[in-house]
Length: 95
Image (spheres, rainbow, N blue to C red):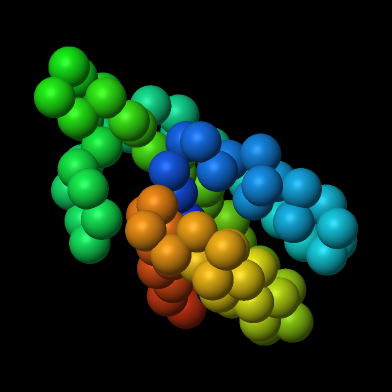
């Protein structure tokens, strides 16, 4: 099992969810809206200087779904190379 976190510019949230639906993945997740922070793209602070914010999606999935999620994120990065999309993962146990 994998624990996956996807941090994505809030403006791209609909694209991510549509890709989940199209690929049949990401049916179970926890989402956190209005996340702020700094990464490789412009800061997303939700203020007058840096008005954008992020969304964070957290999922636990098997290896098959994980490979599809990686492809979804890769595809979105190609479409939106400067908008801020990050994916982090680790092995996990569910109990």
